[in-house]
Amino acid sequence: MKQPGLEDLQDAINRRGEPGDTPSGAFLEYLRNVAKALDIGNFAESCSLYFASHPESAGFISARVPAILSSSYFRALPDFDFEKFTRWQAATPDWAGDLKEGVDSPSALADAIAVVHAEVKAFSR
Image 1 (cartoon, helix red, strand yellow):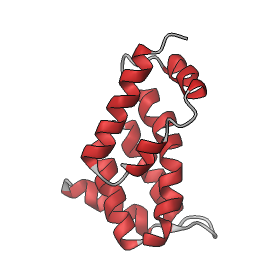
Image 2 (cartoon, helix red, strand yellow):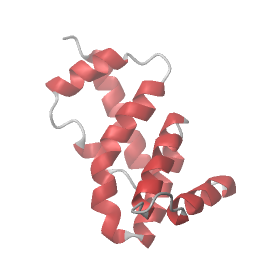
Image 3 (cartoon, rainbow, N blue to C red):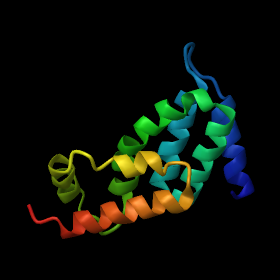
């Protein structure tokens, strides 16, 4: 991970805003920003580092990754038909499984995203 990304990650983990904010809340915000920047390698590496220091939050974060990728990454992808993506999501109820499982591995997450991209492109409904 590039050093500035590591510093941003550490800031997200340590930051507290309003009373009741948690490291996970700050980290989810960080992930949304990384996803908007289309930096999937950094996204997965950040998850891996975060899970190592906050293993109790791994399930909580992983469960939210598909929504983050939908609203931040796929929406920001150039030449990606987001409306078609939402129709594909409705027709493919188990679409998020591989994204959740690959969240802390850059290659697994990139592979899962590539599958989603290809399936959406081929989707005809």
